[in-house]
Image (cartoon, rainbow, N blue to C red; front, top):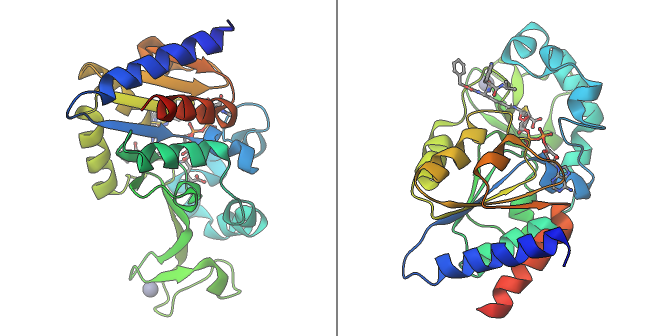
Length: 253
Ligand code: BJW
Ligand code: ZN
């Protein structure tokens, strides 16, 4: 049997044992790798966003304050890739895990709405959402399709508009991160998909879960620091392995 098939069998057994309990908590944590098969580039690694753009120039709070027009220019060039993307089989499998009551929450670092488009209902977005545009002065919300032409676009009140996404050195949305910490702390099972485990606080959630004795199952094409806490590591494309994993679990229910 191939290594991944053995690991998959182990993962299915772990999930069966946990879900056979009367009460349990389970969540999925996702990163950019889950949306790669939908045509959205990841941040790190080969062809990653940060290989092309310098994050000190476009990825931090200071960069935004220095030159908001530059970030808007980038958005005009790239936003449609994200906004027009369609969910792939990994998103669909995660939605099915929620629909069948196997997990209760999907915590995502992604800003692309693809979990919601696939049918996931309880999604906690830690890094915001690209389709929401807000005024930095009065908080009025705008849609990306409905923006003034000027760069950077401004609100009726004169405030600069910005996408509602979290850049480096900005705090995460308070309600979401608090909820995510509470989900991670009480979890019996954490399924971690397509994240490099490099950005905190998101990357710390699986460690919190492990500390509370959760089982950790990982789907990633590379080995990340989360490997040290993994009970099962499925080393391959999540759009291939997550649907197989989900079907195996459902078949045995
Ligand atoms: C596949 C696959 C397939 C591919 N199948 N797998 C020094 C040390 C430590 C920490 C810090 C430090 N200095 C500052 C910090 C904190 C900082 C941080 O963590 N920095 C590290 C980089 C060092 N964090 C922050 O600043 C956060 N805020 C914060 O901490 O606030 C507190 C605070 C603020 C102010 C004062 C005091 C306290 C905010 C982080 C915001 C992150 N923002 C971004 C951009 C958002 C907008 C947008 O999306 O455009 O979020 S950066 C980028 O990284 C994006 C992602 O959500 C995030 C995580 O990346 P992710 O999702 O893991 O993607 P990749 O590309 O890294 O990995 C993809 C993975 O998929 C890989 O592993 C592949 O192998 C895999 N893969 N194909 C399965 N088919
Ligand atoms: Zn305003």
